[in-house]
Length: 133
Image (cartoon, rainbow, N blue to C red; front, side, top):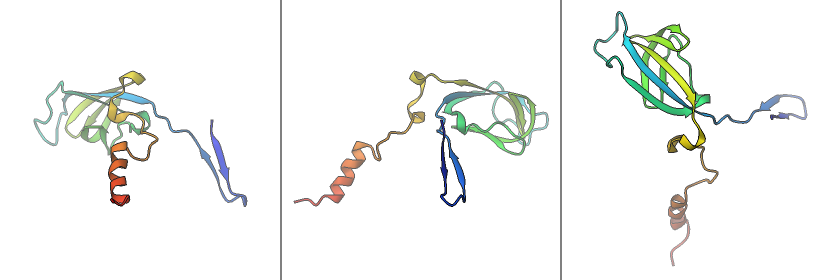
């Protein structure tokens, strides 16, 4: 469902869409070193890392940009080999993504609280705002 806002004068029409908070698990595997790497002996072949992130934040590998997931960033992508395999200045990687069930979402990716501040911060702020008698 989306809402539309518009000016009474007809100056603009903006469509507001709900934010997609689907969490995915993205895994990255180094298949091998590039044929002519910019730097030798970087990450070992077979190295694998994974991280959870919001699907909306995933930027697919694109030539001229680094591919990154939380906690890891590649060198610049120079070629897309197939849908999930790409070559960087130094390495060839394969990435995969899968949806994460709500019970498996790690704490730092969970949806933010509707509270303005956590309770401990409210307590600290109240100590400064309320005069002590």
